[in-house]
Length: 455
Ligand SMILES: Cc1cc2nc3c(=O)[nH]c(=O)nc-3n(C[C@H](O)[C@H](O)[C@H](O)COP(=O)(O)OP(=O)(O)OC[C@H]3O[C@@H](n4cnc5c(N)ncnc54)[C@H](O)[C@@H]3O)c2cc1C
View 1: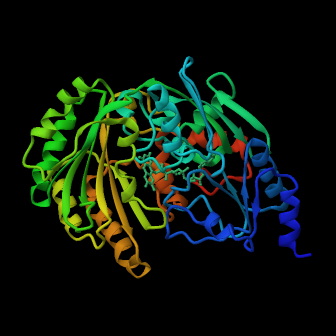
View 2: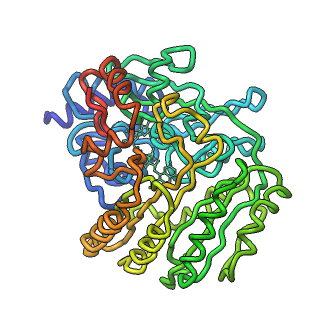
View 3: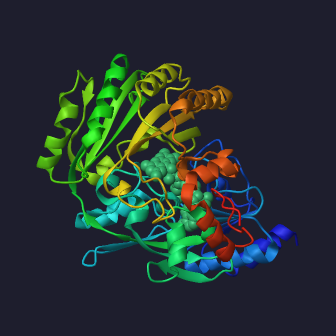
């Protein structure tokens, strides 16, 4: 009997969910993550059905010295959800979301996506801050901070988190909240997957919609300078209800036309939303204006089609010190040279509730009113990889004089997650305390395929 067959049988005997070996027909799809640039082959994929399966998988891997990768929604651009050799703990079958509308709490399993979450919570007109697109995983996004449409009003995803059930490196099942293992609860609110596998995440829910004012306006690329300057001024005095992002993008009609867009979501009443976004709708001569009343879950899906699973991705991102004229001009110059009609440059505005939490109150430290800059290089042909990676790197380098020191951990790419400078920029003043918690909870660094905090 080969070791592979022996291992597979042994883990299968301990799990309710399937265990996939390279010879299984389902293995090929299971090992693939969102980013088509990631091509890794784990020895086994443990497709867990619940906390007991996760515990069995962690113990199994530890007993045999196998490297562990944890897959939530599979969106991490760095590809941390999958390893070469080793055991991929795949939570994609754990997508349950249970809503208690009276207590205004939702419990989501670690493999749920924001689409799964909104589908259940919006039944009751409730929501928590989640990702901008619906296909991103609740697990990875939340543990790294979690920016999204509701962050002006309800803070980051971590600010909505009330408890988490974790399987730790020793295989123990632990609940962390403000009252139980509070240090660990502090660390998982921004420290990523460093502390264990989150099998359940419990969130506070807030009334949102179901109808909200949201959407985007698109201007011709020739107006980009005026649009981004207008966006900068507009975001200086936003109500908490309104979150606004801007982007230099390609038209979604496949024409390859370059556009300058402003995207909004207003979490309050439709009337207040209409008043708040009126300046955006009045400004300039847009080629498209699709800002209007729509279900919150639809706002969450507006950009899904722009991020198809399997497309090749290379991202680079940093917070900006200010959105200076020079930064705007550089963005325009660099975007004009984008080699792929799927790529874009984004500005994500942090304000309101997300910035009223102290930088050390949770492990997520970026609590200043600011714009986060994100270069998304996305393409389809492997032959274009070099040109697209070079474009993202050169764009990032050209913008560097305008950067603040902070980086968003969830956007670090495959090289950056192993660079101590990038990781410490991502955790800022919380780096030392995070290392102390890591030392206690996972001294052997079992969970290291992440924005790694080395004990
Ligand atoms: C198209 C796209 C859109 C995005 N939009 C946003 C956005 O709007 N806002 C935002 O903040 N970020 C966004 N991101 C970044 C996103 O937050 C990160 O990529 C995040 O890691 C995705 O989480 P995931 O569970 O989908 O990913 P995965 O690749 O499954 O997980 C990434 C890592 O997170 C950890 N992890 C995941 N789930 C668990 C779990 N249950 N328990 C323990 N560890 C876990 C593991 O270390 C894993 O390696 C986006 C990414 C993409 C590709």
